[in-house]
Amino acid sequence: MMSSIALVVFQHSGYGFAVEARYVVAMGTLQNLAHEQQKYIDLSGLLATSTKLAPTASYALRLRRQQDELLLALEQEAQIIELNTDSIWPLPPLMQHAKQHPSIQALAWHHNQLLTLLNVQQLTAL
Amino acid sequence: MTDSKASVEQTLESLLAAKQQGDNKIVDVDERLVKLVIFQLADKYFALPGHSVKEVLSNDIRVNFVPGMHDSVEGVINLRGDIESVLSLNHLLQLPSLEQAQNKESSILLCAGAGITTGIRIDSLLEVVDVAESLLKPPLESLPEHMQPYVAALFSYNDWPIALLSLELLLQAWRTQTQ
Image (tube, helix red, strand yellow):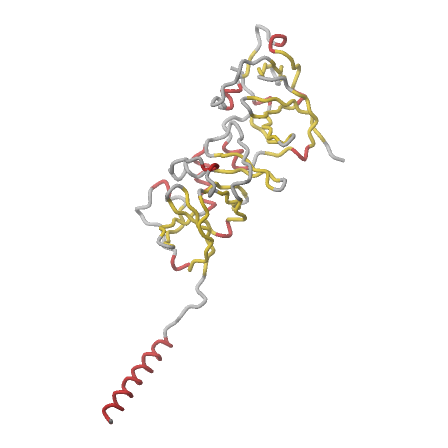
């Protein structure tokens, strides 16, 4: 019996990302999810993908960390998927060493696209 | 006639003596050969031991960029269901970074050593040869400082001055550089 894991998948600057669905409290429009005390994550700065300018974010994910919640602004609406665990890979050893942020956790293939899996607990707010 | 015969005998004698001397020379027909994969990066020539190179992958293979990595990581490839990293050595070797993936002669060496498997981007594969071990010379003191930790030997082939790299030491230096 093949096992699977629930992920929330989204695009940023043309690249595919995912976070574990169990850490996603809510997903929807930025307007609906944002509030005054919200801590935001700047994925462009975090992952240095600024060579492709992100258009204005319209959607968001509210993520639960151990101590607090963060809002991750998205360019496009996110999707929940069930991904077969056979499609998920740890980072190759040298990439584990060369990653520029601790939140980069694993890689996965979904519909022939590479996804970078982010560890929500390691994401940092602005 | 006698003189002539003596001359012939002398010549024959010297010939036989020379042959005898030649026979006494030790010809090492069992000299150790090492298989080397010779490649080019920018305008420089390098080699890796054949046992370190598992496969040469053509430039047709799709390299997927992974955001948030050091610039020396080109991306990952899906190789028969396994994910392998693809590294660029240009920064480490202090060579200009060209649009290697767009170079038709470019390829990827799938290398393995010290428990690690990874792809290494090269500009072109030149030769896979067996070279007599005696032709490998220790690195010169004048070798650029940044290359000293991972150049195992120097040799010449086809008039190319070639630096033989140790994969293990190369990856160790790559790790240090990406810290």
